[in-house]
Image (cartoon, rainbow, N blue to C red; front, side, top):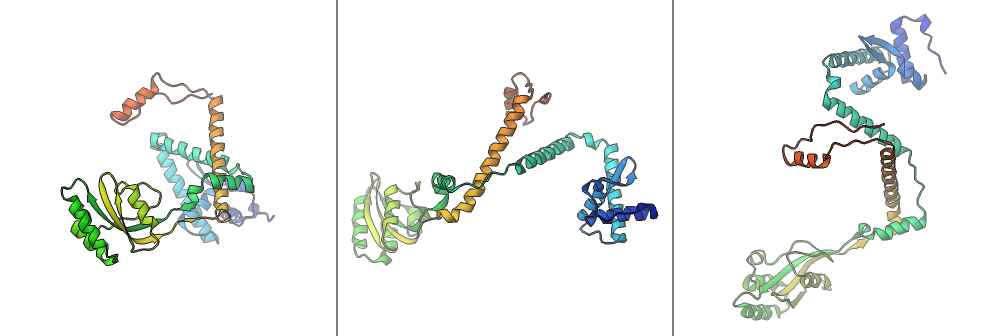
Length: 311
């Protein structure tokens, strides 16, 4: 390891050389905490100058850039000292932000220590089968539907008129049949076109028999019907079908491994927090949950009171 001989240098050159050395990876990480200057009560270390350079978007390559990094770090220390004098380090929002960052770092540290083993074939396949829906893309289609509601006074006349027109088996006449005979005003306006329908999924607009008939057609354009339910009679014509697919196990396995690792980390988090609870003293105010609920329903602010006590 190359040594930095500060004895033969001025203080400024010594500081710059120390900074250059740490940036070049010549010194241990402990040297990153070596003070380079002091601004009031705030120390500026090598790591502070390195962060200042990174934040400024420049690299420390020579004496000029090193001096710039020191200057920027000292400016930041001046602002920190000013914020401290203003009492901002005791500001509740700042305190809460620091607490949140500390918790994030703690959880990140704990999470990185969890290194679950690569799941074996049996475990990965069991996950695949248990979550098969995630690896299945259902078929979807769209088409046209001619609906004649039995609540209409002339529904039988409409039924007979639609049947006669559609008996020609000409795909081109379906839109005309909808316009002429459907009891659904919206369908008449768009010749009965549906939105995309998903196979096996309930649809609030159409009866299950209607949706199933669209998917059962051997080819697009074919007219199927009449399909009779308690409330209406339908004819359908499919316009377009996109077949479903299933991701094979081998293709899904890398994603399964990642999901299982995430699950292991979540379980480790639950166990970690559970362990903290088991060894901590938590003192709640009387009727704490009720007070919180009242605050949420009222002004939306949590009730004032002491924080949790831990031993």
